[in-house]
Image (spheres, rainbow, N blue to C red):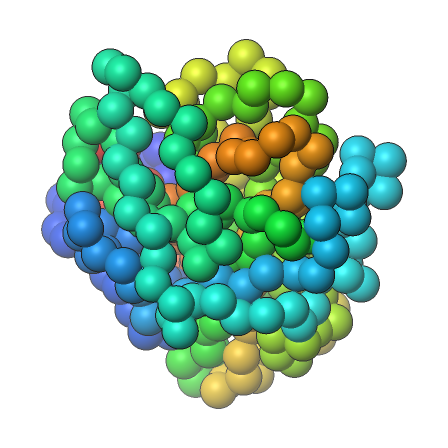
Length: 260
């Protein structure tokens, strides 16, 4: 997936598509439509919390797929927080279980959807999409960036975002995709961008009109709040084989371009 995107990045680039569903070219979301002050997540995205506290998930147990379904939806019913990290004079930010509209002072128009769990087991970014094609989907090439907004200050278990999907709804069951887990290293600096990409093969085909639910799960860490803050950006979902689908995408590739 990375090689396909890199090879086609020189294509003429128009504003990225923000398709309502997964069509033949694919789906992309760069979250810039939230604007520098927006308090609402893009359509199809919501923020949830999973029950528990900062000891519910550990490095030893991980986040089991059996614990990822359901939870409490906090946004869009609740407003996102807005936090733009000043990279010249960085701060630690704060916690907000409704999620965050994140940005960086180097380019305040480049936004990302983030999490900051507190007093819960974990925070969840969910995308609910539909197969809008006329044919079934058997696999998807999925890529996205995870941006490091603040640094960890003490030992911090289960850093970053873990990826899961469901074919039946928000209640699950969900399936883990470890290849799309993103874990910032202890040496990651504010403003750094970590890329993830993998092909997800479904055990049963996703029929036209059927739904897919993706979840990025952020553990409530051991350390005193705020946790390390991370954000999801530049999501691209392409029905496989990606190289064929990407050849006609053009503007969809804009979502993967680095703008800093």
